[in-house]
Image (cartoon, rainbow, N blue to C red; front, top):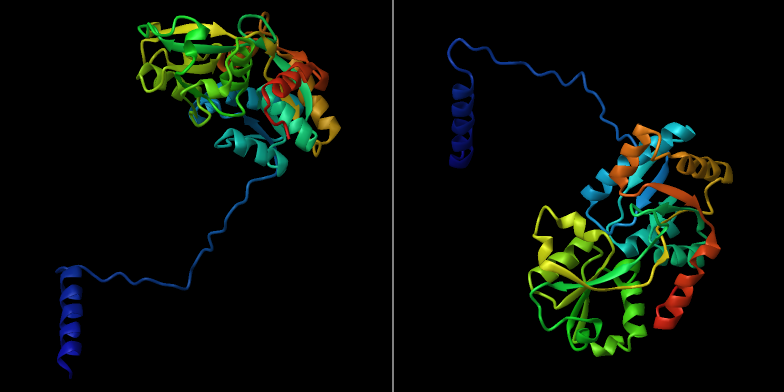
Length: 306
């Protein structure tokens, strides 16, 4: 017997010897009974996506109660999906992977122009308006920035090129005050996250940032937001919008719209809990014409809607 084979034989014998201790019987394993493990694909459902301006965890916490409510009210199976970026949200909608889009008005206009998205309802913000603004922020101790004019030549961090409150609205405000993109030291984007803009300004990585109004509350448990000042705010524009894919049956879209408009913040405690989690207080009916001011602003600042 070759030496290598003998060594292998002795190694196996030692393994068996130590595996079966004194008084122990070897366990016989039968391969006659086997169970096939099959992959279970997700059942068909209407997909609901919240434009990822915050983390997926934040998006889920804000909207899972609302998704459950819509499924219950309409009798339609619904599932929340989570695009990674603003661009991913747009592409998923175009590919038919998002049926219901909750997005800022700038993204909505892109979805409508490119893929025929149809507006169904706008949210009513916590301040009672169906509109919102962008804000330009800086550190409170940054004495070099006291007004919008002082932003010239500074480093600007924005949310995303497709962010409304976090980029488009502040850019329009800068243009109205005589500042164009070339007037900044740099313009960088924070991966579509409002939190990243605020934290970048707070840490001194950038001189100023642009966010949607109300976003400072999201990080109030992480940083001292009293160290952040609002340098300026844009004018108000039509608020965040629910839109549906042209692939969706009209009957299903009508059921979802009716369920949204049925939510009663004032008189129904369960509805209040759903809306409190989502950070708005109700809905108003909406259609495509509501967003013409966003189209006009985009044209003025030279941003592409196609």
